[in-house]
View 1 (cartoon, rainbow, N blue to C red):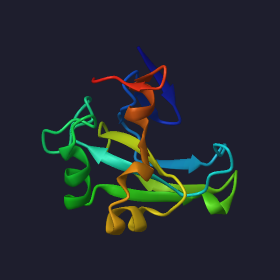
View 2 (cartoon, rainbow, N blue to C red):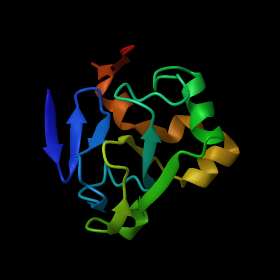
View 3 (spheres, helix red, strand yellow):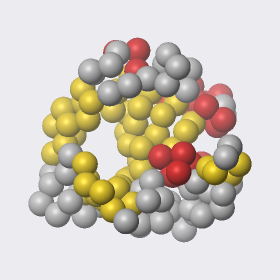
View 4 (cartoon, rainbow, N blue to C red):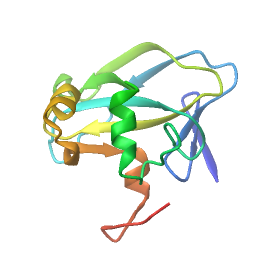
Length: 136
């Protein structure tokens, strides 16, 4: 099942695909989880499974691939508050993306300090059932 939101199709696995013909998107921070601040970003992935270099988001090597290939693009710092926007962001038509949030820090701090537990991906949220990780 796929639902469309603001020029992107969302697959049930948390991977988004830019709709054909879409080039520029605007992202808006709609809510914060329990007042936790951090960065919100988008990650260009290789396919509908959310892979980077053959690694799925559930693979331990995925985070290394994310950092080594510099796939993260910061969109909004949640310190900017609800309603903050990233306007005119260019996407590859028909490209695949996942969204990420860094809890309580910014992306650079997570990368540099290897605090990977602060990184939450859209694929990880849907791959959890009753608080337990589901391999997907």
